[in-house]
Image (tube, rainbow, N blue to C red):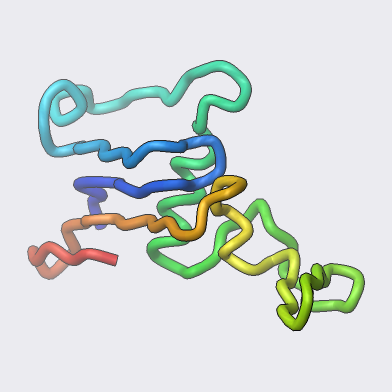
Length: 110
């Protein structure tokens, strides 16, 4: 699998809609690159977006669904490991999408 694009909106510290193309210059010609930035810039959020799009979860959240990991607001129960926890504070919606080239040579979007 080769990731061609990561995009999303309202994920953690990334407020605006974002789109990173790995199949266009300058990244297409880079071979190897590094994700750098200040604390809170969104480096880990980019990796979370990949996991969220592909697996509907991301590693920074606990896996258990114990009562200790439960958040309640009115009648709604939201576990601490719910993927919606990555939404930027105050945002009502968001998304993560990954476009990738699979081993069968076809492009897929997750």
